[in-house]
Length: 173
Ligand SMILES: [Zn+2]
Image (cartoon, rainbow, N blue to C red; front, top):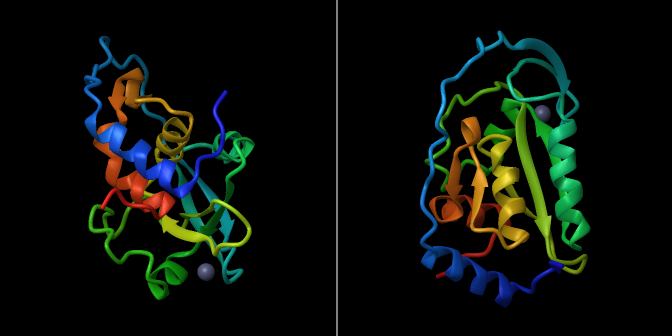
């Protein structure tokens, strides 16, 4: 049974993941369905309240909240908000996030993660690249060394170390 880790234990786990030798295993098999055209959805910024429209490529939001619930079940304080582009632009969330494209999809529906180890500390706030970031974070906190990527490929967590550090606000240093 996994439990909540301390800051020191999280650093130790980051180091374990960095040394891990799990291989990338591409899924064998063809993509056998046509990609669907995403639906246009209306969202409301949870930071300023502005309404916006966006293309929903990922899901209806249920999946993300299942990931969050699992992470919270370990005892971490975690929240997700959807922000409009203006609120993200006015924040410093893009600083040091050169791996995030400037106009990543879905437009206007930016996933902002709040994470902290306990109520005594302020939230660490980060901008997610896409919904798979939550899958990466969950795998890390549940002491896995890989996660299931696109088309059921097995992706080593080691390749996402930078994303994990940004989401938890803790670095190997
Ligand atoms: Zn906003």
